[in-house]
Length: 416
Image 1: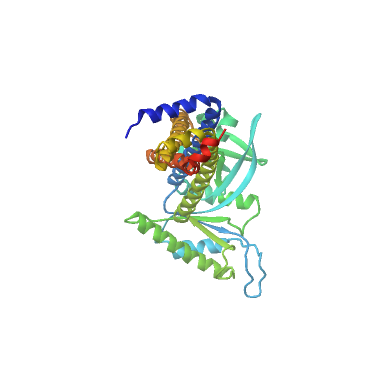
Image 2 (image 1 turned 60 degrees about the horizontal axis):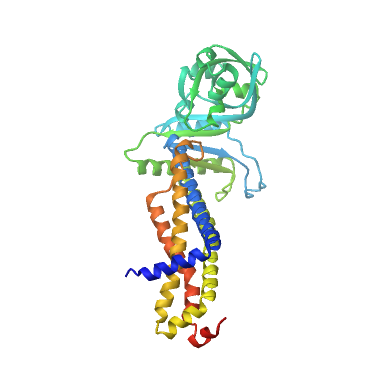
């Protein structure tokens, strides 16, 4: 029931301690502000990783060779595994009816590339023609590597957006047909691609796998292997087939390279199914972490409110004693203190909440990076935060209210 006299008392108490109330409210506001901003960043991270995940091929699977983690058949651990052309041929032949696209991949980082006076450092991917479809490389000019390039070990290259910008000033039409120098070897530019996967993919350059193997004398190491399977009737069925394919190929490679069956380091496969689970767990962990930081910050504000209410109770000890002497019930004293604490906490919290939501609403659409995409806070989270504010106010006022309710009138009347 609305009691105007109680509200008058609350505003009178606040007006007597303006600075103290302001500083206490500021701590609550900052706690809510930080919590909302962190949750907005967590949501932006979720959107960013989801977008990158969606840009990948759903049925793509990659096999990586590493170092063994266990001894096996007299062989020591930490043994380096290299996939060979024989491995690749065996897999593609055995599963030819299931595989849609396939390519070995050799990678060279920091490839110094020059065109006239311009230069830059990029990433070489040595691949087969199918890699265009394995990596969603969308051509905007020229063509991709074809089978003739691969068979003839041609010195040709397909450039990403960053090399085009650095070497040709962004003029991708001019680039096709020109000769660039990559690690002191001349290559003819045959195409330009773009990839929605992010800025890192923009630094990629594709050359024939056979050319790379010859130039760098790597006939027995094909790098990693990438495949996509033929489409399935349903998404879930496709993921299950992909997972089964991964384990079958991994078991074959374990036997071919004498790797312990339980060794998880020597040979690893990665697909959209496992990546999706990993991304979900990372995002979930990040969200819990941000909630933890925000709530701890909010707790510091609650402690501040509780302290100020204890001080107020101390200052009003004589008044509370008179109220109780005149017949005021303990619950009315508790209600008075709780109402003031909830009021201060809620108003301060709402200010922090609205400011944070306004900032995210204004700045969020302008944040469009590979990692964070349009950070904002769902409506359900905002509603939960309001409930959290009210609970926080009740917690902040509980101890002072309980202390006030226990004041004995005879003791209070003696208070100076």
